[in-house]
Image 1 (spheres, rainbow, N blue to C red):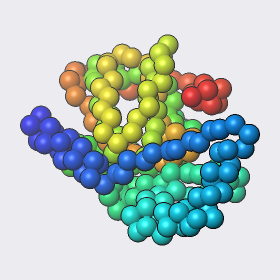
Image 2 (cartoon, rainbow, N blue to C red):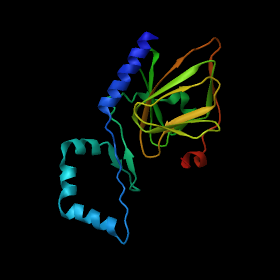
Image 3 (cartoon, one colour):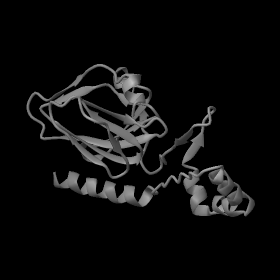
Length: 201
């Protein structure tokens, strides 16, 4: 357990150092004042100067624009490995996921945008989730979904029905392991998380 605690501490420190804090600024106004403000930002060269900033440019590279103009947050796989396609458990996931084994029995799980696992239960064991990159969701049956961002730690109690996965507009990585494992521990995979539930987040 001491080794696992040290690894968790290292994971948190690395996630804090490697992951930028993203702020989304939303401008509102009446009679077109917000649009006028943005036009002034462009015409004055302020917007261009921000885009030219090396730090911001590097951060901006963490986003890609899809064909439908959706901005998708990416993650840097050189920090946390993406691993191999999760073919063994693909039947229990909506979308594509990837597994990268780490030391001390830890596993890094990567989810593409909108990917999530089915509702499931860990019998006679506690699952620990540590978000290290991107954004995702965790939800227990009958409760509100909880957002996961780098540094979020969730201990999933034994016998609790739940799911976790990526946000619709972001890749997502979390480290996972089990603790308080009792004799006869097992995982029970249940029904998929429906689009209606997922899209309501």
